[in-house]
Structure formats: structure tokens, C-alpha cells
Image 1: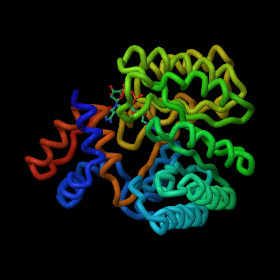
Image 2: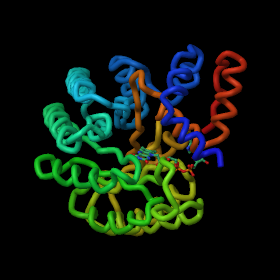
Image 3: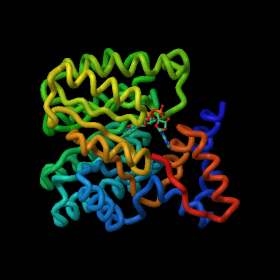
Image 4: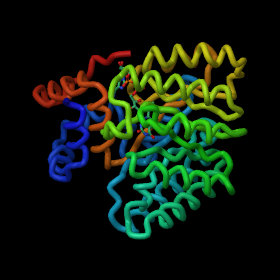
Length: 315
Ligand SMILES: Cc1cc2nc3c(=O)[nH]c(=O)nc-3n(C[C@H](O)[C@H](O)[C@H](O)COP(=O)(O)OP(=O)(O)OC[C@H]3O[C@@H](n4cnc5c(N)ncnc54)[C@H](O)[C@@H]3O)c2cc1C
């Protein structure tokens, strides 16, 4: 019940204005967001690299309403990639982009977003790293996968994302399981209708496992994005059965969520990549993290009342 409400709140401009103007929300948000600047983000990437953890960096923002805003997002990514290379961190970090931030919701937006994504991919190639295209709500699924296919003609390392809660996703996995294809499998973070998406935890888990089997049986590179212990165990069993070597798959987790598990998987010899968001436009991302775990809401409200005492944390 709470989840759709929180996700709807994530789309409200009024609530966004209120939340972003409350100084102490920042301390709560800091658990999930690396900072506001490229320098803060790179210092998080370095800290993670020191622990043997890779990063995928997201410049926050999905509310792009003008072409100049979209160009600005592309410019920030290009600068980020330049600084990543200058800092000698290209080996440790790739980037994640959202087509909505790059202009896909504008008139003629698919072409605008694709042009911006191409600029970013060219900068990533120069920096010696890769790009993954995040998946947003179901209205964008087909266009996003089309854009990935187009980007892959010039940049075959472009990563796709699929969401196990959508009925279509097992078929998408079959289509994406091609040689070298980097595919991030997540459960899905948006409120989707029952006609298109599984609604129960168990149905989503079954779909996730089916997708894992398809991706690991194929010649691509599955990127297992979950914090769910049952999904992680399944992936570990399947990758052992398939005789996968550590460079042929990844585990991916979000910054600030189950950090002990992040380190445990890395220590066991798996490649682990952390999703590292940065920027000032954290509101919608933050609300999705709250919606995934109601306990975060309690923590958030407690912090509001106590003016931001620090989180005791959980692994
Ligand atoms: C690297 C990465 C990239 C992603 N990219 C996308 C994307 O492009 N598009 C998209 O729709 N979604 C994306 N997601 C989000 C994803 O779809 C899920 O919403 C999110 O990962 C929660 O699902 P879960 O598999 O962790 O399982 P859940 O069943 O939600 O969680 C399992 C356990 O993990 C812990 N946990 C999970 N979420 C939280 C949280 N917010 N706070 C604290 N603890 C938590 C809890 O212990 C929980 O019991 C991404 C997730 C990851 C890890």
C-alpha cells in the first residue's frame, strides 16, 4: 500500500520542493548518495576501489524538461569521464545514464537522448570505460532497449537493464543473451500495472530466477543487481553450475545498502560493482529507495524529528 504512495510522492514537484529545502534531509540522503559534486563522487569511487569494489556512477536527475537541461546532463557526464580518467580511476568505474535525463521525454526526445548518449559513449571510450543505460518505467522499455541496440553498433560494450517484475522480461533476456552482451538484471523500482508486471514478491522472485538462468546459460555478461539474499544464492548456484569465471559476470548493489554483503561477495572473489549516485537532484532516487524498504521511512521520519541523528546502519 505504502509503496505506490511513496513512488507517487517521488513524482510530485511540490513535495520535491519541500523535501529539498529542508537542510537536515541531506544527512539522511547522504547514506544513498555520494555527494553533490564530481569531486565528492570520485572520492567515494576511490574509497570503494580501496576495498576492491567497482562503481557505476549515476548523475542524478530525471526531470529534464528542456533541451539545454539535457545538454547540461551530457556535459556533466563528459566532464566526469575526463576527471575519472585524470584520477586514474577508469578501471574502477563505469557510468550509468538515464535516457529521461538526456531528453527522451521532450518533443522528438528519442533522437535527442540518443545523440546525447552517443556523446557520452564516445567520452567513455576515450576514458577507457563503459556505459550502462538504466531502465525506467514500462512506457519507456521498448524505446530504451532500441536505443541500447543502436548504441551497441558503435559501442558494443553498452550495458542494458531489464526488470524481472515485467512479464516481457524473460523474452527480453533471451534476445539480449548474445556474445559479450552486458545485461543488468534487477527486480524493478517503479509502480507498474498488473496487466504488465508481477505484483507479488514470490512471482517477481520466480521471474528473477528464470531470467538468471537464461542470462547465465547464454554467452553474455550477466550483471546481477539485487540485495536479496535468496536471489544472490540462486545466482551463486547457477554461476557455479555454468562454470562461470569471475570476469564473465558481476554482482551489483546500491551505495549504502548491505555494505557488509558487498564486501563479503568481493572477498569471496566475485566482481562487485556499486551504483554510486551523485548530484543535487536526489529526490526521486531517494523516494524509490524509501519505497523499497519501509524501515527506511521510519529511519527518515525519526531523523526529521531528531534533526538528523546518524543512522545506526544495517548490513
Ligand atoms: C546496481 C543496481 C542498479 C539498479 N538499476 C535499476 C534500474 O535501472 N531500473 C530499475 O527499475 N531499478 C533498478 N534498480 C533497483 C531494483 O530494481 C530494486 O528496486 C532494488 O534493487 C530492490 O530490490 P532487491 O532485488 O534488492 O530486493 P528486495 O526484495 O527489495 O530487497 C532485498 C533486501 O535488500 C535490502 N534492501 C533492498 N532495498 C533496500 C533499500 N532501499 N534500503 C535498505 N535495504 C534495502 C533489504 O535487506 C531487503 O530485505 C537497481 C538496483 C541495483 C542494485
